[in-house]
Image (cartoon, rainbow, N blue to C red; front, top):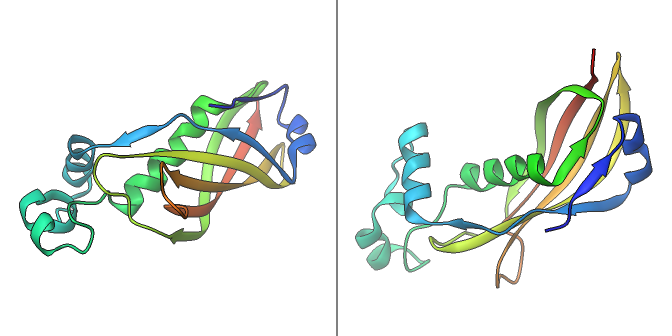
Length: 155
């Protein structure tokens, strides 16, 4: 795990164009997948029916939901990217989301985070983060996306 600490939202400017942090490995186990299915209502058999997935899936078992994978990666930013003097950080959106390869149940993933751009937005700044979700032992990423976050100064 590689952590990036910034003294203020303005200090993010020093990181534009650089990879700044790497999240911890997180296991995409069946209880996590089932919990996501329960929360979202997405009970598609490819995610939650281990017996059927073992027989019918081209992956040999269940796989994590794509949105679970990107949600977990985005949440890991809270652990590895800190921006002091921030009163509030808000995820403004996602761009260019691609689910590149499946994440079989039991796999471990982690986020590799780089800062693509930083723009002023009112009293705060908007950061456009490049996120690559690696799967341990995988030959290509599980997912790639841009995470747009707005940082507002502390009062």
